[in-house]
Length: 366
Image (cartoon, rainbow, N blue to C red; front, side, top):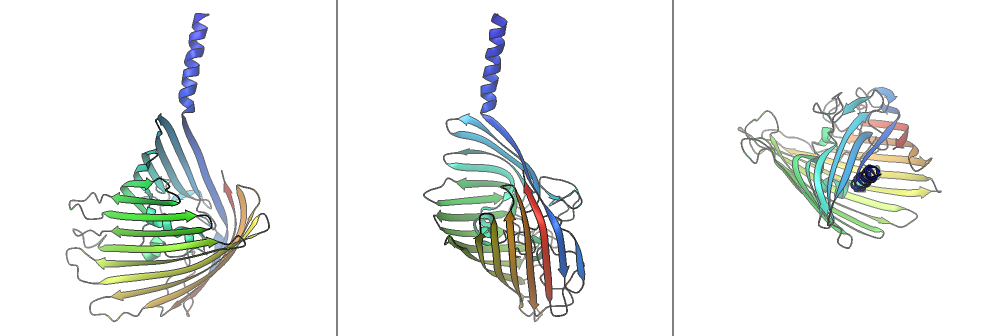
């Protein structure tokens, strides 16, 4: 009898301890049919997602008492069309599943949260939310497209602090160690601030990513970015807009004063349709200018129009369709211009610098 009571007490104690900890498996699967037309027409299944980027992740929390919690988050990207991973060590074409979207461990409390590892930056999170297409799919803005603009939305080898919410105001800051012989090489510093109060939303961000002065063949650009945006929800529609400017300046052993500047201006609107639908529309304008010694480089310009519809079949499942059109001006060469987000290889640009994109798909979250 005593042994039974002792066993029950042990089980009760372990159950109480387990109740203070939790681990959640979550994910999103998003794919469909994509069609892109420029110089050629290419179609097939969408890889990373046309509405939300596909992912698989684990997150957990342990209550340490006195308002303090231990947290972790591991998240990796997937290509649903063939089951491979993306954002791995080899970049967008990596085929192995890795936790390259998020890999953090930290502590959270009334003060906010401190995390260590790889994460989306506070600057990106503060302003990218004003893209009506969520920076995803053919309709998404190219402002944060790492492959085409060189902007890195994630910091690694980093320490991050996110503040508590002070009457709608929050801020976050990240410091990413370059882990090089020279401490400043490949170092990242960024900050983001947001204000959300009822229908009004505002965001501001700043980033600085250093190049590598010891190796002029890679990581040889210092990039400085600032961005701001805002939105207002009128109920019948939500209006949003943002401005982002990045400047890359040459660095390294044989660096000169060459630089490249990219400016993006975006406007968007989302509007509910009935109880389950949402219409999305956006306009993006891009301007890229270069100051290169000995060269007369024209300012490259591009305009993008996007229109989409999302129909929620449930809280976790939705159908969507997106059409986007991109037109480059002062295009340099056959295909040396901006292309739509997620454009299939081989589509290229037409002789006039245009590209069309159409995506129809399904998204399921779990």
